Length: 448
Image (tube, rainbow, N blue to C red):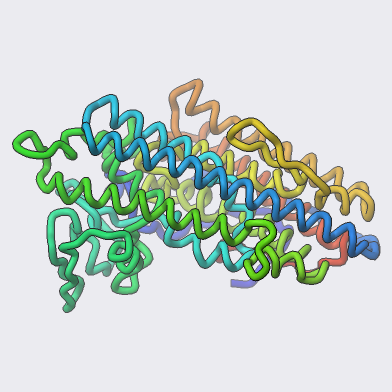
């Protein structure tokens, strides 16, 4: 697709991905409200880029790495809290222990969602992320699903049901899954070449805690009973021992995966990713930082996480679909971009990591570009807050907001998409002020 930077956004109808959460796959898709997205103007010559102070950039990169270490460390600590809550739930399944495990999962999403701004520009994060946060997923690969469950077209493992079987049939192949381990589950990600086959990560855990959200665009999240984990005669839906083994293995694996990523960003390690990043040149590092911000803003948030679901009125493409937590994930994804630009991250314990920022560099080179980007970042957070408020104050969650013919809520979402597109244009201009030309943030093949 030809990229059209800073053009007015035009939301075109696209095909719906048939993998995910709701039972709305049978509903006819209605055209979504279009986002009138006035993006940054390209008219007029851009001011000449200022020569960047190498020492100043090094200080910014150090703080950037400090923030990465902090946000991944917070993701790890909250995942360990989730691990403890899951262990307590499996030891004594009840309404109370299931609720506690769900709350721990929700808490773990807050720092992790802010970490995603370190993707795209940093290959070490982007290559790792798929096994940790991939979505949407064909949940029938993992466990039981509703009888009218529809999966991604052509996925031979979509109803394999690892929990119910010690051997699964995937096309012509039989795969031994008698022992449910993190290593075995990781090997099943994208089995048979389908991206909808997601066996590990936050969303596999989410499905195991909440179950399918069968409410479509009506109120309500998944409602898996705690008795799905009760051992013996009171077990519901069968195979409670294997379901418990799966939940235990996938949660432990998440902790291990996050430990690995913390190690990549740990200060003072001679040969880890952080050491190589800090040794790299100023232009290369600035491009990584701006590309990560712009790509999360444009292709991922405006495109994959919002535009797709809105245009198709599809709860299948809602991000945290089983738990109805999408509003928070979107908000904290956007907050992560703002954190990086301003060089400031508030940790889960309330302490703040703060230091030299990209904003400082841009302000010195082009004060107006800095002012404009800060204003756009603030505007986006305000738009995201409106989505959070619909859920938290009005009880109308993202999957309800994308219902066909809900024009008022469609406008809230499309206005947020427009803000993200405009913000991306400002990110490109800020990058250009520091000599980073032709940034081309990833648009994930969406036209804006």
